[in-house]
Length: 142
Image (cartoon, rainbow, N blue to C red; front, top):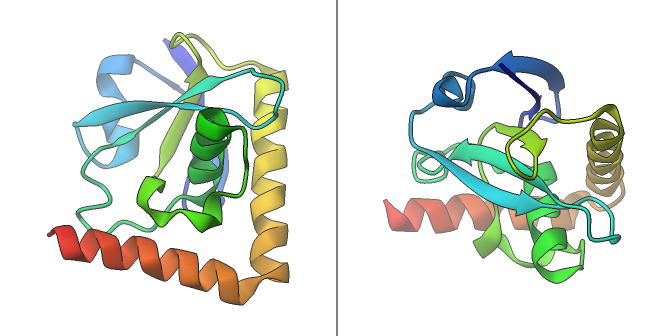
């Protein structure tokens, strides 16, 4: 059993125990995908497991996972500028090689959740544009 950290698009989160083969029960589908994510610029990465079909099925964008994906890929946490790289639906964060997530890593993800909450409150218009763009891009692909 692997211990991960489930983060939903609405920013609710919880620790979960699961078998990798059964991650889909938490993600809303059996077609899991994996992406490298980071929440600090120190080079530490984790894995984010998500449903590859969630976006095409109209799932809400996951701003925390999108922040982590962009930070890992570019070193720049300004994820709201690129809706094309957004991740949608729930995401399970685990260690980079698929191992248990640590308390320190959960604290970093929680920092990402707080950053997203603050951005949504401080910049509701920009956040709304980003969210709408993600949903519109997905609708155009259906």
